[in-house]
Image (cartoon, rainbow, N blue to C red; front, side, top):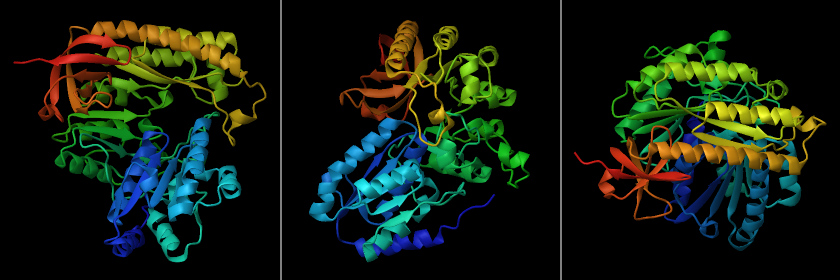
Length: 472
């Protein structure tokens, strides 16, 4: 597998660090979108901090503002354009450098709109040119001329960039980039490119290093994690097998052996690629959480076909049954799109039927959003907005009814909770998650942070549980 040489990027980071030395410069970053975007933002933060910028939350204080964008849903565009309107005055007042990166910058119509309506930006860059960011920034510092650094390619694997992680307990590790599925509603394959996997050795060594730094939970990231190394195997692209890793199942088993890592999660798999060896690895690996995210998108076989999902309602339900039989204590979460073009009432009823039968732990519900450049955008049988919202409300009602019942089942049980830190909504409380990803709050000393603690669940609320520490 080809890796990009980042020597010039690292040299430029050092050059900018010298230029910025003693200037007390600040940066702010706004991340939109998925956990892969968040992982990219941690690398951008790592580079900026090595270039002698200090992070601030207030955009008004920043000398450098970076927007890391997403293009999966329309509201991300609205958010970006709203924020650009806000930062224009900072640019005018203090010469703030404005950089816009991420998936949205791979869409030509968005870049054209930026040039026409928000021409004050300094840099645009895509996910394929992340490592070029220091070089682009250097050009702005030296020449003050706008830089457009977007490659319309599949991209390559980048290793060795600095990284500044937000969390001290949980860390995300990207295992692959891109997607080959071309679901008809999704823009991701067009902006992130084709699937390409990282070398097993690079992943294992990254997780080992995180364990030594005190991290307890690892989230493995990819657009389609359970096809890890599949493209390489099928196309005879050479890779170096390491610690017996030659597939996603063997990767899970290898990471499970790493000392001091206590929990392993992954997102997102694809139902059509959920092979028996992966199911068995989840069962056998004690550190792999038994909550599996299994995106449904629609319960209608007809809609799934138009979505290009490559499985039927019956195949999905059969897979769920197999997983429930194989993996003790399995819980499931899912993604569902409401109102995809052509979705009839009976199609939506099929979705409700699957939700009823599977009884998910968590459901991430989305109203279908047209994305320019996807087949779904060109379909003529678009669903009226009022019907989309009416169906969304019915789905939400069913899901919340199921969650309320499930939450009550936790009361009185003992759950192992990895304490992640203070609650964001109440500084006097600590927070963590169950194996099934339920948020739990508790009263306790700060010394519990980072520890796996048995808690007795004493009360439930719609979006969280409350627990008390079990002594002795």
